[in-house]
Image (cartoon, rainbow, N blue to C red; front, side, top):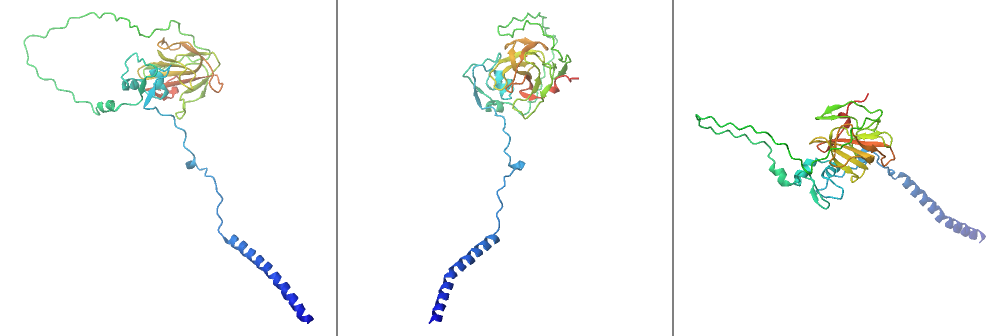
Length: 300
């Protein structure tokens, strides 16, 4: 009887250990299956050039622009890199190119203008033959041209004499695109021309108050602060296709409509948004900014 009882106690003890053994085997099986499963690669940030976002492009000209106070035809065309002559043509604005606040201007060619321009020039017409006559045609009488009458809206010439070049300024000149150019101020170029920049020109460092001179003969077509990012700005028209711009001035010495001579003081150098004593200088041909060093004389 004792032996049978002892056997029963051993059987019950072994039965109680059976579930624990099964749990151990099950955990081992799960661990083995997890180790055999294929590993997923960890997420990696793609830093290749193709994945980088594209550079921010300059804001294109809107189809229609509403004129704000302080705007001129030249400043609007300058802001969007357009040729002021085209803007005047698209909006049928004649000289002296006056615009008013609230006026809406087209900044692209209207369909009628684009369609009216022929792709090829017309062939010249052949003159019709005329019958010979014995009488010679009458000769025109010579006339003496009368002196032109002054216009009320004619640009006034600035009476102040040309300023002497500042210390260190280059007196050399260079004739490019039918215009004689010189450097607009003394100082070294801190920022060269960058065609991808928002404001494309030269950054010439100096000191506050030093003279800024006209780089060439011309007429002041803008003098103000309406163009964001240029500070006190002056724009001079040198020919039908050439403009120059002078930004970040401390004080402007000329007004719109003034006639200026090359080397004449037009402003005093100021500071930019980075608190740098610098002149921002641009040259534009047909509204497009070009490297000013291609027009200015070389420096020694």
